[in-house]
Amino acid sequence: MFKENKYFGEVWFKDSEAIKCFCVLELIKEEIFITTNLMTKNESLQIDVIYGMFNSLGYVTFVNCNIQHSSMGIIETKVYRPKYTFICSYHIIDPINLKINEFQIDNVAIVEWVRKMNWFNSIENKIEKQEDIKHQTVISEELRLTITKSTSLTSNHEFLRIDNLGYVEFKSETNLSIPESIELYNSFQKLFHFIYGKSAQFKSFNFKCLSCGKWASLYYKDDLNKENISGFITLDYDTINKDLSKLIKHWFINPDITYCADIIIENLLSVKTSHSRRFTNSYSAFEAYSFKFGKTHKNPTVEKYLLDHNKLINIITSIPENKIKGYVSKIVRHRDYLTHRNKVKNKIFSQFELLYISFLLDYLVGIELMGKMEASEKVIEKIISRAKSTYQNMQSVNELLNKDFLKN
Image (cartoon, rainbow, N blue to C red):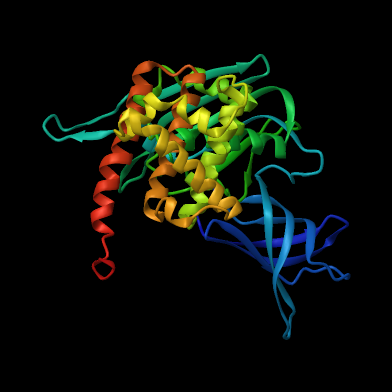
């Protein structure tokens, strides 16, 4: 979508198209900023819509433009930060009541997830190209989702360049608003985080214009992208591809599944969350799952629901089964302490232990949700193995690395 970080053009308001002002568009840390001397007569912190035309881009529509900075001098200038930016080579995009039914998003994290690479065979002096991947899921009669990994070739007299592309495409039988379309993509991204643990700011968000049949583009800063992989489930495409359509259908159709998973995803996306906050989130995710999908108890409590998973807890933690009840009681006691501050502090876990109990609760919910979405036993066993490695091996190593000589 953007090949440069700076573009030059002119901008104007819809009701005064004759008054056009010079403008500089800059892409800074994945956000768009426009600097211009175009301004309204009335004081306002936000301009709803600004239209423009820029070299190498075409017609541009800026929506929800917050004023970031104003400067006074010979010429007064303002810096606007639009929330949404629409780009079209053929005509101005009017964002009011805009509807679409086909759109695709280029996300480089899909390339890394699929892990199919092209390489140069130096022995036979040729390029070895792996087959493209196209995985289509019919979510409902009205909605289809297709994940594609392909390649593009660029060449001139000096070089031949092969780029790997990964994108997800949505096709709907009903016309969707832009917020509805973004929500569909966000749902896909959350699933992607859940099964792989990573996403990225999209390179392009292209949609087919219903008025002219041509492709146009949308840009906004994506709050669900995360460059570093979380290390939660992390299943690559080859591991999950046979189950992928079932997972996608359940994820988009069953709101109870996403309701429970959303809290785990909040943990995955959080950068500087305290261990106590992370534990509280994980506890809430387990509580939500238990009330939605757990066994029926006469007097349901989280402790009873945890004990329903005593075998899985034993496998992941290697805590003897006869000690799991005491371990579970301590988990509940620690949550009560954080919530009500009504328990003796020396009968709860350390902050370091709390982090790995949070991981344990996330894995309990994740494993059960994968089962609800009809993941194969082979996939679930792989997740259990990862959970065991995280809780036991990683905890042991980090305990040594975090040992404080002064506190001994």
